[in-house]
Picture 1 (cartoon, rainbow, N blue to C red):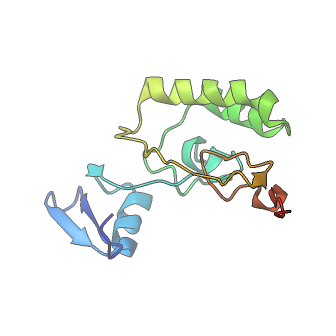
Picture 2: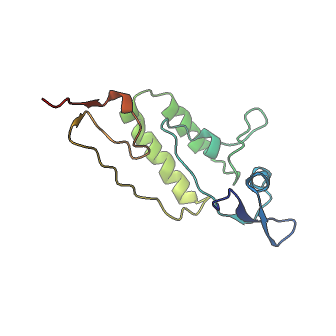
Picture 3: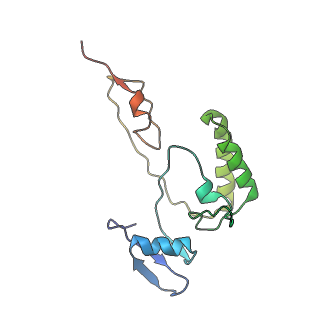
Length: 146
């Protein structure tokens, strides 16, 4: 993605690089009309990989499964993981989902941005989530100076 929201894609129809606005690139991705695309992802705080990795069917379309990845075992693991409300209990399942996806490689993951978050010592109960420094922000409390 470029700073103005546009991106480069190579469409199957034209066989030539096409620079379009974010809407046209998204249109090409959703219709599987590309050979390669470069894009960025962000992660949600609630784990639900269904839109990206579940099999798309007429009764349950997955509009963000751009590669048309489909593995019934991954679908079963996702359903199992979503049924467990405790993140610690579902963590092994999500690791298995990631391992299966990594093994089949529907995407080429280029990098992960490491972030450093600093929290002043006057804040208590400050656990930083790697996905967002703002997760559970309401639980943090600042000590008042004496």
